[in-house]
Amino acid sequence: MAKVRFVLLNPKSAGFSFNSYNDKDYNEVFYQTGADNFGNPVKKRVTFKNRVESFDENQKVPARFCPKDEKDRPVQMTVVEFIRNSPFCLEEGDKRTPIHRIKELNSKKAAQISNSKDKDIFRAKSVIYNADANTVSNLSALFGYLGDDEDMRMETCLRACENNPNSVIDAAENDSTEYRAVLKDLLVKGIVEKRGTLLEYKAPRAAKAITLGLDEDDAVSKLMKDKPLYASIKKRLEK
Image 1 (tube, helix red, strand yellow):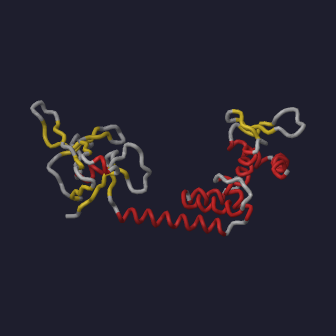
Image 2 (image 1 turned 180 degrees about the vertical axis):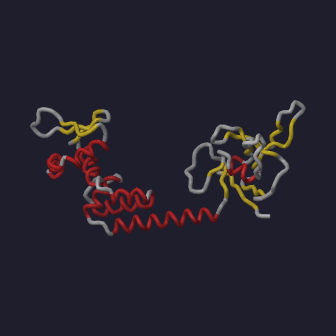
Image 3 (image 1 turned 120 degrees about the vertical axis):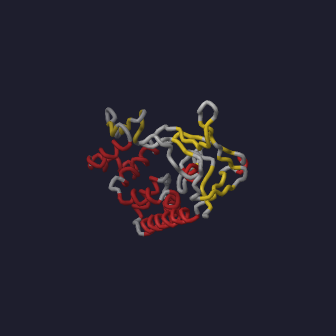
């Protein structure tokens, strides 16, 4: 019979156990082994005495699980399903949150996710290596580097490829990327100012400031539509 292994994310938490949890519909799910003298369910605990515990994948247990199905019968599941469905179990590829205490050791699924991410990283890096200098400059500005050093621009983009390849690909294909990068530079240099979320630009010798937008997305949209305004603001970066 196939075994499924689960590992404690914190080795020091050996002894962690649970006997119930709420599912996504807020129904209580528990491993019932019987009932007490008052008819209340007796709930069995799933306990991790060691850092790694193994469970039979298809073992049908005489115990019953809740919640009940549409015919008011307790839902049947294996112990492995009970653990997998719990909020304490971290799925492969998910980001860790404080509630997660255990993780299934699924090498096949981990390899599939790893291979998929490797392909995304390769695609993102190919985009960067084939991009022109202006595109690399705009992308590096989006990912945090606003300087003029070309090596640092490339390094910033490649680091972004490792961390979030899809965001690099999306940005490279988005028409707003140049405008968003220029806007970030304008903000850093104080040419465009934020008042709360409002973005304002005051031209030299102008009587009052121009409102670019209620937020950065709104300002980018305005700059894309108003080409003369964009050109005049962008010139301020060249001085």
